[in-house]
Structures are given as C-alpha cells and as structure tokens.
Amino acid sequence: MRVAALGSGSEGNAVLLEGRHARVLVDAGFSGIEVERRLDTLGVEPETVDALVITHEHRDHTSGMGILARRFGWPLHLSEATAEACDDLLYGEETLRFYRAEEPFRVGDLEFRPFLTCHDSVEPLALAAVESETGHKVGLATDLGRATTSVRAALRDCHFLILEANHDEVLLREGPYPWSVKQRIAGSRGHLSNRLAADLARELHHPDLAGVLLFHLSQRCNEPERARSRVEKALRQEGFDGELDVAVQEEPSRLFDVSELLARVRDGGGRPQLGLFEG
Image (cartoon, rainbow, N blue to C red; front, side, top):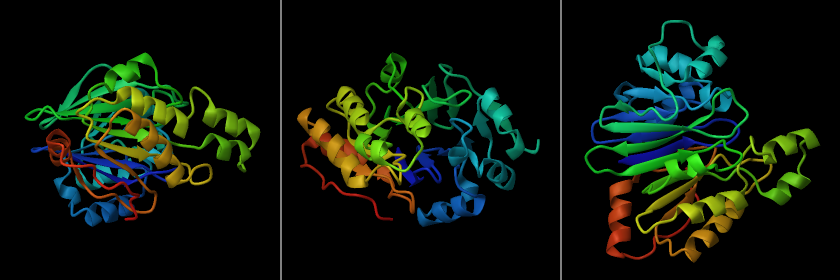
C-alpha cells in the first residue's frame, strides 16, 4: 500500500491511498483544478482514481468533491447526513454510495473501516484502510477533539498512521481568534492539540508501526517543528524506529510505500531521517 497527502491544513485536505488494485482519494478539500494539479505532482492521472471517500461535510474536506465526481465519474462514498449537508455541491449527476460507521466497504482490494469521531460536524467519520493481500493497515484520524475508546480501538495495529496535530496549546491561547473560537478548537468536538496527538501516538505505538504523518496543522496556531518535536519525543520514548513527518498545506508529500517502511522497521535497518515535507 502507498499513501500521500495532497495537502493538509485549514485551507484544504486530501489523502491518496493506493492498494495493488485500487486507487482512492480520501476527501477533496481543494478546487477540482487544484486536486488535478496535486495528483499530477504525484504522477497520478485522475482517470486512474477508482473512488472518492468523504469523511465529513466541512469545506476544507469537500470543496472539490462534486466537480471531481462529475468530471471523472468517480463513485462518491459518504454518509447520508454528509450528503445532505453538502447539497449545494451535488447536482444529482454523481454516483453516490452511502456508508455508515462500523460497516466496512470495499474499493478494489482496499477495505475501508469507518468509525465515528468527536467533531463539530453532522456525522464526523474517520477511516482505517486495509489492503487485502498484505493486510497492511493505514489509519486516518483527523478532525477529532478527543480520542474516544472506539477511535483507539479502530486505530489499533496500524502500520501507518495519519494523525491530526492541529494546534499548539500555547499558540492557540495567545493567538488571534476570538475566545469562543479558541474554546471550540480546544474542545472535545474540535481538534487535537500537539500534546493530545503525542499522547494518542504513544498509546497506538506497537513494533510494526512503520510511519506517522502529522496532519491538519493550523497555520495560525501551530508550527511544523513544534508538532513534530512533541510527537517525536513521545514516540521515541516507546521505541518507535519508523518514519515521522509533517504534511504541509502548500504541496503534496511524497508517496510513502508502507511495505518498504515496514520492511525497514522489521529488519532493524536503522532509523530514517526525520524531516518536514517541503513539496
């Protein structure tokens, strides 16, 4: 399995997942043209994408979904509540396939296991994706104010983890937002701080966790180095020897090959260099 962030932050989020026989985009929080540009940067032709999966209705996850589904004929997987909340983006010409929490669905050789999160949207969902042939598991958990027991259970034993580290608590407290907005962001239906992301990453660590990509960083209330440093320290204390990086807003990350990362960890081939993606 391979995975890449097309970009992540308050201005747009999208993730590309590739199995051996399927290619799926999770969320499309950029314009259609911008999603095409970012896919091209990764060497991916939009016509080769098999489906688009939407996690929740917020525009930084959905703004391009309608035009892309219509333009390329991508089946659009989302919950019924999310579809209703995105009514203005859908023209009735899309192929909609509704899914529910705790009810797995397949796209080619990828099995998606959706689960509910705590966030201020109508039906916030996150995903774990498992590749049939290898059993490799990627967890995608963003836009969650807190990690519930069900979230922890759904993300257990992931080989690669895409995890929200939205804000630094000090920067949020001292930042430019009104107090009501700060309370929403830091609340149980808001976003994970660097501290909470580090705590969750530590709890989810196991010997076969080969990679962690930090996601959905606030451009006003966080800094990539702060997020990376906080999570890195927590993971290294648990013996993590995989790859850790931070998705940025402006450009896609590289494509991670989960098989290669996992083989490196299992072979004890040395700790990969830590860094930030710069496009």
